[in-house]
Length: 153
Image 1 (tube, rainbow, N blue to C red):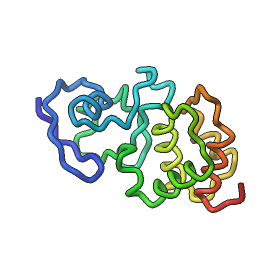
Image 2 (image 1 turned 90 degrees about the vertical axis):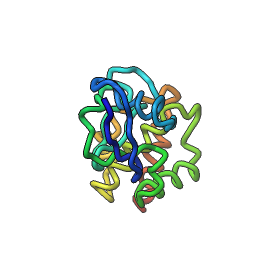
Image 3 (image 1 turned 90 degrees about the horizontal axis):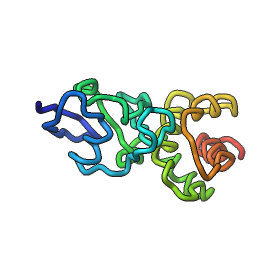
């Protein structure tokens, strides 16, 4: 079946089965490969994208559930003012080590700063709890979020 999707402000059509995970539509059908596959069960956060600004796990979200919503992927994050600040802070503080989880981390951080421009450490910990980093760059991730929010690091 053909699904009309709005991804990063652009209209797409995807002719896929209704239960196809959004992750595979983004990567395999639309060629937007920045969103990563991590676990496939919504536990690691590597596949985080935004649906109407809210972070969701694309690996478990069927494409039929996102028709009519604005999807933002890591490729579109910099177009969001908080996303641009987060990406800049990530570069300035050299957050990424292997980098595999970073698209999901950045998308969760962007959603956090959109909803809460001056988060506390507890707010950051709560918002980022579902994003795992095997390289354990959590201290740098928190510092980058603080910097992106204009708070002292």
